[in-house]
Image 1 (tube, rainbow, N blue to C red):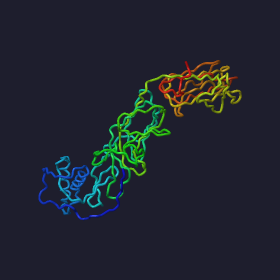
Image 2: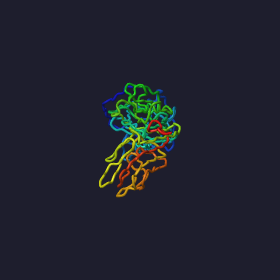
Image 3: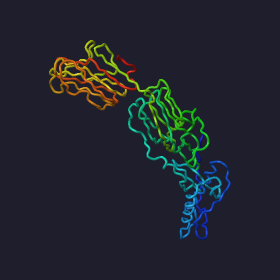
Image 4: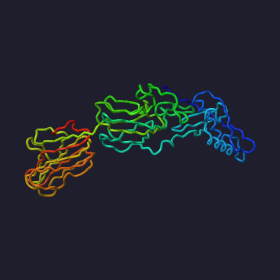
Length: 423
């Protein structure tokens, strides 16, 4: 859908309207006029009528009668809607109409521009980009009232996977594919790609070579699932379901234009995303006495793996030993964690004991145990229902040997390990 920008600024400086004689009536009269049958001609007529509400377009007099006349027209227009065969009068063809941001403006001299329609009141109390939302669990939904500028994108704050549903409703506002330069407006569009004029959507949307996805309607609201081969779809066509073989992919929204940098305007819409997958339970057991490798296992400054034994501590100083290790995996809903630690004797010294914990995005969620001192092997368990992505393991103290032999994890939703490794 090509568009153009027209340059030029013809000027007109003399007042347009004569002052009416006599008193200003307090009552209204209904008149009718025939115009060419299209929304564009109705918009031109509406803008021309709006000039009557501006005192600057009347002849000047010491009593500032022009302002009183303009106020009278404003009162009448506010009391009656502009409907077919309704309150209209004829004027010449001097009027210019343009879109400036979200504002529809008009002018009769191509120099002084006045607001005819401002839709921004319809786009309030909506969020830009919320903070991170983790992972959506089976059966859960999250909803947002989104504000999206034409020259930007809006990212869903959590990933989507197969079986998720996406629904965009209550779209409002308008945008344009390029900046308006000069008196002639560029085309503006509703969020579904139809033409936007005077606060209404008209016509039918159509694809264009200028779209980010040319096969979809130009300047419609698009959803994009960010894969090696991106998946695009129009957002305002009902409930969409994420297809097969998609796991934890980013999702964002944008206008369907291939040049966001020059676009203008803002729309709003209500977004609802649900994980429609059924609730599932999974389990995963680490047996560190095996040969490995072990999913997500990393060591810090101390500790190493010995096949047949487990995770074994290293000497820190003066006989004190320590293991510093973690198990890292995608954000997941965890219901149970158990860490089995063995001390050859009850450890002593500063920081002696087991100090395991669970983390999410680098932040401590809860200790599994802290400073627990004993001799022999014991499992330390945490039970709850939290979203985590790391299990931190750090037994230490003065003794001959420290080792960790096993970790068991239980959770719900997507299995971060891909499959179960336990009975």
